[in-house]
Length: 423
Image (cartoon, rainbow, N blue to C red; front, side, top):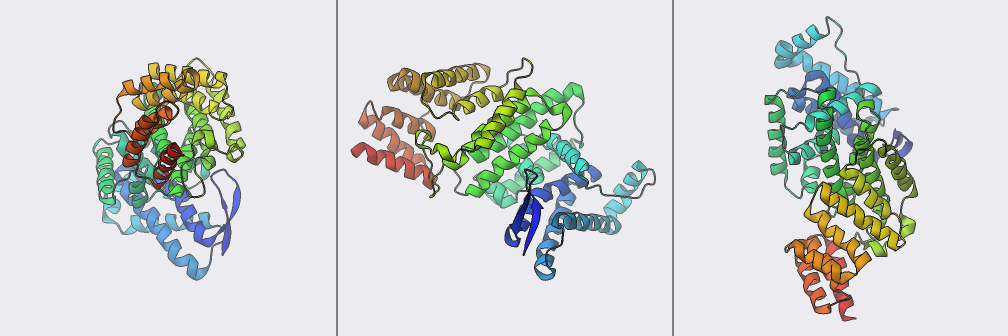
């Protein structure tokens, strides 16, 4: 069985049944959950999640027996509405406490679940600000965003965090409880709070994207899904007038440039490919063009965020030629980034650009000042920088990096480099 469905890019795609339900779970679960949370309030988020989950469970049992409905997404929305109404009728809590309040709010209107496109978009935007509320820590914000905004299962979230289901369940429970006790509502912040609250949302989306892009996880599908969901949510922000701001466009430009090289970063075996060895023909030119578009929109005004600078660095990496102009620009962008917001990882990455402009010896001296012993990236980079300078030191750092690597792809690449030293 097959069906047409709407892909995240808004295109109709023909999908096999075995792939259809997981796809719909990823795209529709979060919409149903967000709309129900908006209707019931965040204090009842778990009930919204249960109803959404039950809807997909019914689809998994019904569709193989009765065949695919003509419009699978509409079928899910209808079942979710019926389940919600049934829940309201039979549940004492809702019957005695929530339903009267909702009836009062609606001044006698018939209870209705609005799963229209505009209400779904509004609900997801409001949910985004709710789960990124400053009362819960950043790690929990990302986990909650994965669960209720992206429709990831607990096991998938545990995979993304390289953790286990029990830890993730506890983390999400504490986050939900915090939202409940702090009485956080589902609403976009007022203008005077928008900048500060939006900053947290962007940080969460940035971390969400990086979880996918830099993950050492073996499951390539999860890596791509993480990046795709982070981009989809950032798109929602640029489509909403009050949040269509330069840093949001800069973040989307960064994500577009980075994702454009996704296919070239790993070979057919899932092994990491060095930037210099990437096949340029695998780069996605449409995503690069999209990055240019959002970069231009990000240049409105005078605001310069870390996302502007990182998007600039990512842009230069979409130009394969090893020109002096390219690496001088990358180096200067890193210099400005470190002044704006220092991080050891950015400082380490800067030394690679320095090696391209001032040679490996200068880069080695700067990298060793960072003192990041025990870091896989630190020893990997030093191993590469030493390769043309001092072979024994290169071998020492590459072997150290190999001992720290956990992903098979990283191990394969490091083993290949070590072998090349003996050739």
